[in-house]
Length: 359
Ligand code: 57M
Image (cartoon, rainbow, N blue to C red; front, side):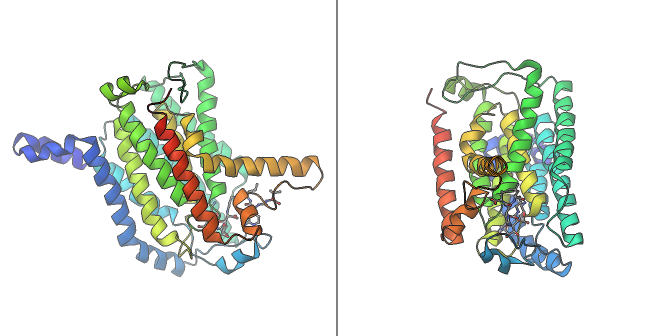
């Protein structure tokens, strides 16, 4: 909105030219989201505490988690406000890719909110069933895909990191593939969000990496030079990613151990879904497996554990899944698990960035 209001003033004051630059608006979006979190955080935590939106902690998990009972939840509502507001303030609102990302984000947030609300109002750990979540996610994604098709922005070719010349065309199969990426990312981030700061850190790192990739993908010269598929308008996604980075870091301020607030499903499902959407829209779908390797490992650990558990009639590979619980039960303090997962996430982010030049 500020872009539309302030950039036209460059005709009178040259200084206003700065609002044209995506790099400047990305930095502004990140800082705006960060400051919204900083300023409204304490008020929001008091509000959800007063409304008794406290976490119901399962009693079959690590015993160290029982003391977290009643920690205020639904921090994702504030993240959603910060992310959406700063994107709307700084992005070009005529850009369909920005709207699709925001719609996927808000849609997944509404699913998560319903889930959280059911859990909190029933004071139980059972919310919306997995099937319902997946069905609702599919409806949102199919709706957004329709929007892209209408705008002629539906590219069904994949990009493979390290093999930039190979771009297999999935044709009609691209639709279920996009669904898999977005719903998969949404659920994987949800599974990761089980220790203080464990999800917010890697989300901020992944968003930072995609800020760079979206910027390059939307830049004719840079994308040509680095052999990335050029996606017209993708540069504006950098602003959305910058806002996501700012909102996640701002949330981490309060979610750092010992957490004053959890993001809830309203936060984890929406941020994961938004990362999946950005990966699809910037035509860097497979790259998400590298940058978001922590989320992939968490989801894989659950699949392996559940599969093995069923096959063997009760045997386990890990002490408990998702894998962060395994390390906790091995005796690692919570902060050690979290910081080590952040370090891995930074390494994965750097590997992803190296694919810009390597092939
Ligand atoms: C939700 N939710 C956290 C918080 C957060 C299929 C199965 C493996 C699914 C999995 C599951 O339900 N995962 C998704 C994970 C919960 O946090 C809330 O949920 C939101 C995110 N969705 O924002 O609102 C708890 O996580 C802890 N937490 C923190 N700090 C944070 O910043 O400490 C969260 C955020 C919170 C808090 O304790 O209460 C969760 O873990 O429930 N299920 C599981 O994860 C369960 N695993 C399991 O049953 N494994 C089995 C196999 C055979 C399936 C096994 O390995 O034996 C475990 N989860 C818990 N206890 N809490 C098991 C027991």
